[in-house]
Length: 425
Image (tube, rainbow, N blue to C red; front, side, top):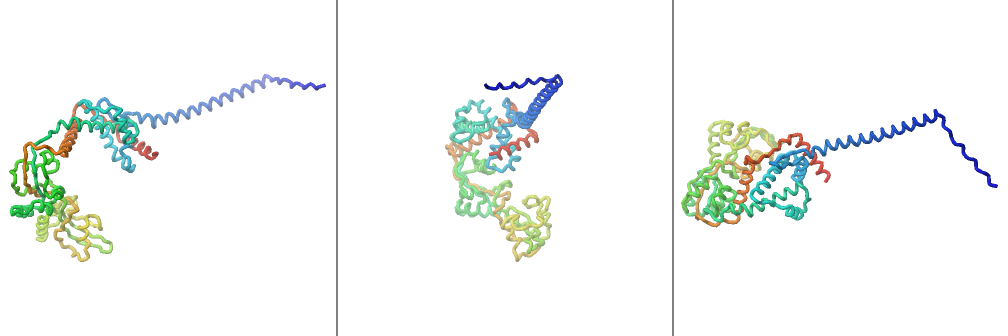
């Protein structure tokens, strides 16, 4: 016979035990609620921190061009694009350029639309794909601007630039002094070759490279590459007549002449105390040297004639120099073991520096009042026309450009975000 299992007696709670148990349950619920609340609060704090520190700043306005607004995220993205293949340390120097680029791109888009030109989203996508670029707002806008400029050049400004114009075929050379120009002019009058003399003596890069032959161009092209006074002369001169030497004080040339005095030198330390002035021609340098030899003050003449930066402050006294601080021609003189201290050097020719002022000899080979413009010249004229059009967009009082939202603190924050983005790549 199977023994019947005894049933476990039912536990009966006293009123006191029941009350204690209920209190424990309440405490557990409170602890659970408090724990959940803490988690919610922490997550909330993190969310608010992310919202305040990242989301909100990124979506604040940064730039407005008429009715189009760009936020901080867009500005940060543009900073990243412009800083590609550059050290992060360059970003602060790019910050203002990026602002102007965003504004100009939008002005171009809006200006092109008024002229009837636009780039469709499909065209932009195709262009992005061809360059393997991401399909994001900043990249889309940059590509759109390129497409619009291409359209404007080929379809709008091509119509603005004439196919033919008054042109001149000019030969010229740039010489360092009136004395040299007069001597070369005499040689030309005797029948010597302009191209050979220009190839040997001309100081202008173009005239030296092309041996003085600038070819056929309309006036606007010559104005881009030559001094205005030379262009005006050429378009009013008779064909085949050589000009008198024409001086232009703003002309740049890749040559200069040093007059140097070394009061003291430490050969062991390779240091020298140097006084120097930079002159624009050998003839001028010889004249100034003669004045120094006659007893005139180095400082006085340096302030009057030297083209070296800072001469107004240092009066030609460059202080203590070591090799490599100026130029090889300069070093060769001041560190010459046989140098005589305090002696004024002969003029030292230096082709590694640039000085201002020169004399032109000009000859108009031929002229044509309605000659077909070369395609390269037309491309330059179209580029000039679109540059002027873009400048007109900036000057147009109807265009409202506002970047006042971007104070220095916001730019610094944007730079920081851009740097982080670059570091993550």
